[in-house]
Length: 138
Figure (cartoon, one colour):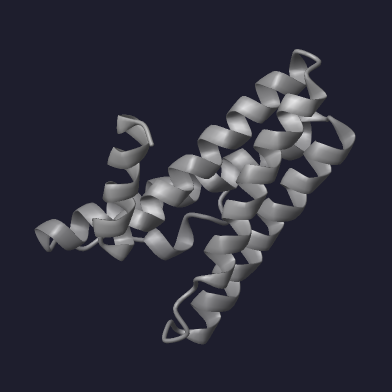
């Protein structure tokens, strides 16, 4: 095992769950972005491998939702993660960039919101209107 892999493994195994969430979102964004670029360059096989990784993360995010969450929040997050998953599947199957862009837009908004929430948890500062932002388009 190389040093970078060992470092990442240590980071994952010792990270608090809120940091793991951010790491997963970062990974999904990175893989989907790289897949979109490979697809645009005509490398469908390389794109497919990366889309599959992003899809796996979207499914993991949905499956790992805390059962103790407010039921409406849990349902909404699960719906967003499944939307992202379906758009990544569509991008992978069709080679089109529009579905990937839609998935990346949602992932980016989620990453921003959860990043703010984690920072607020650390400082004890409330995040105003965080629950309303994902549905906005602008």
